Image (tube, rainbow, N blue to C red; front, side, top):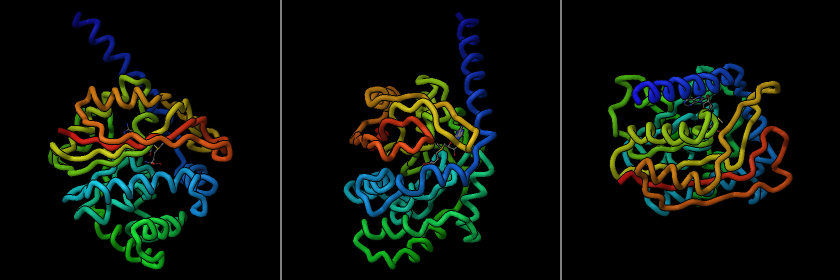
Length: 278
Ligand code: SAM
């Protein structure tokens, strides 16, 4: 019995390590270009993916008045869009990624303002969602720069995903995570375990805003780096949230339209889940 369990755990560890190895080739610049430029980020269209995601996040913070001290984003990658609404509602925002290249890309924009990627259209769009003039984007940029206090290394496959001593357990008031868990897990049980691990960061009563890919089996993280993804369906997302103890409050789905398929993945849809830790 014990041997069987150890064998299963060893197999799981090997599978997780195999996925991690793909990430050695992750190129932040290519990833941003593939996913965060038009047509996927076309702010003149309401059927483009990025405006859909920004709208989901904006509505969640507004309608549920989600606010508090600490907002934590898990697996930020080189992107900042996912905290552009939340940064107005929390005193402190913590970003995180597994890869130093991504943490350093985030730092370039946050600390030195020297990123090659232009987040201005995103900042303007979120200002408009908030009923402010798009010219308020600089205030939002300043707000974001002032509330992000840390960019931590993270590994969602560890029972406590942050480095020891970086943040007390259960201290986040809200967790955001986008396109991370399914693209770093070898299978659905590992995805579910990663979700359970995230939960250790969140306080009781805190919110989880989870965005992810549906029906995706791979994505390109550089011209020649193809990263495997667990192809999820809506029922699996709901089941994983339920078995890890979250109360699901909302599940919205965006189905990809043909011109969003730009040859960098085989994603079929995107889900947005709003859940609460009891
Ligand atoms: N959140 C960003 C977004 O919305 O586009 C990036 C998502 S990207 C598909 C997946 C991210 O997970 C990458 O930035 C990668 O470095 C990170 N990652 C890889 N392995 C990880 C792990 N074991 N734990 C946490 N994050 C990991």
